[in-house]
Amino acid sequence: MSVATQPAYNFNGKIHTRPELPLNLNNRGLHYGDGMFETLRVGRGKIYFWEDHYFRLMASMRLVRMEIPMHFSPEYLETEIEKTLEANKLEQGHARVKILVIRKAGGYYTPTNPDVDCLITAEPLNEATYTLNDKGYQVDLYKDFFKLSGLFSNLKTSSAQLYTVASVFRKENDLDECLLLNEKKAVIEGISGNVFMVNKAGELLTPPLADGCLKGVMRKQIIELAEEQGYTVKEESFNPFALQKAQELFFTNVIRGLRWTAQYRKKSYQNTVAQELTKKLNARVLLG
Image (cartoon, rainbow, N blue to C red; front, side, top):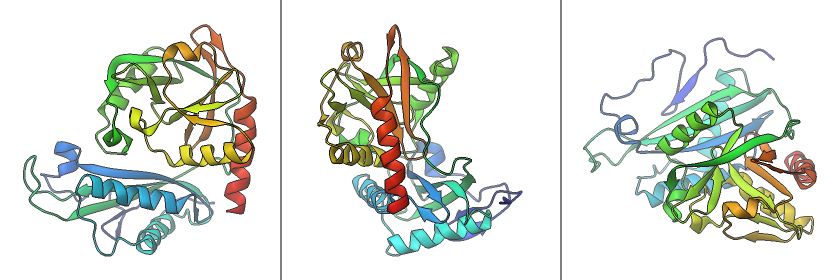
């Protein structure tokens, strides 16, 4: 499958191939991080979990009081995604698609223009299915800064400084992932996804949304799949000490699926549940 040599992108419904993005100097995403985004996985033209992504984006825009254009229907955005995939010769391949919605330039902290810009990009993915990592992650805590609990922290915004700094820490310490904490010192998520823990009783635990974790689309899928397989799933807070007693620890996101942890400090983990859920996830995608 050939891929476009010069990546194409979709800006406000028009396809561009030039490397420069036609942004206003006073772009609010650049100056204030005033944007929301969704990252999607597409396989042979099918957008995985599209309905969940669409409604999360609309709910996020409403929460931050963005003006939602009348034409922003699921069908319209899906068509624009398809146009972007075709422009990148990815309509029959596997791709990572990002929708970024930014409030148009105008004003300082207070916006003066109610309209939004919409940028859609696409890039190829090598894996056709969700595949569990062969080598388990090496993980530790990131404790320099905390993510605040509360529903505002559930959103995927373009203000990602905490994740960026935590990623630098991860690289400096030769880690695969870091666990983020909220101001109450509870474990809430990883840098690039939600976190799940299997305790000694075989229960699957994940932090509640009120703790400040991302309202992940894959998080929702894993909760549903685990319940269908008969697991007891609990959305409850847990602190770092609980990690020492867990049987499994894994991370989830829409692009990679599940990523299991082999080592947290001196604690080692299994990946039995992560393997089973990965198989069920692929079955759901193929049948959905």
